[in-house]
View 1 (tube, helix red, strand yellow):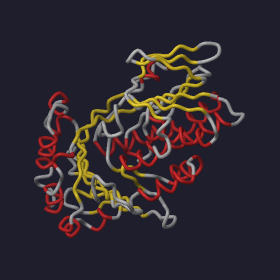
View 2 (cartoon, helix red, strand yellow):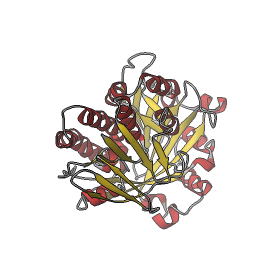
View 3 (cartoon, one colour):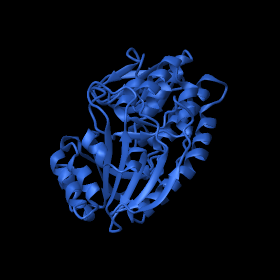
Length: 370
């Protein structure tokens, strides 16, 4: 069997590892020219669902690399108001010293690329596919082509594969924008940061539509490019942030960080100190989008995983973990007697409640209605 995967994100890379380990001929095509090209986020929460999927499909050497480059385990999710009065706290047990509860997105992707040098092709933007009785013929924007037995769209929320396979799916903009940033964990920042901010994911809100999340990224083995940091994310509508999309997505990182500084100007002094210590060049904006109903499709040669099939908001902390779950199920389907119809049914049943939960959480957290 020959499998072509569109997208070298987390789900696509995990699937490639599982298929390669099972002896399947697999190629991953990625539109970006290199792994470093786009900023998509910083810290990713890994749940027991994600951990189980990684343990199931990754070769041992890759699994050990993921553990080595992961962050120190965290055990807390907490909420605060703008003056850092705690509103709620949830503590989760950590399974053991090798537990992976969060990762840096870049370090995680690089770990998942271990051993895939001959499998990855960068600078390959999907254009279209044609199903024949015996294969799938794939065309790329650069005029080249490829042939596979199965095509997997793992190309994210704006999936071009899904656009051809399920053109009727609506992906909704929920009206919330996030400005992502980093606060390097210097000794001064460690001294001022609340203990909860160094234990896990913390979200604060001023009640008027501004929200700010902080979460630690403390590496077991720091990458060569950077060290430990606090992820910092400001959320709000365009009106709350005081900038249209045209303005927001054209801003320099320093100007974006100035929006964050302005937005928390009357918050607790500790929050202001943390934001003031941020790395201005690390800021970038994203749009939050979701589907409402996870789609079904009829092809027996083309399928989808991750955000390509069930885009969701980050408000349930489940997007990456659901993609990993998909990758494990699809590996099983392609290496056993299960077919793609069974895989599709499993994906819909598993992801629909998560999509709904993440949307409801987002409506509460961000004060929007979809």
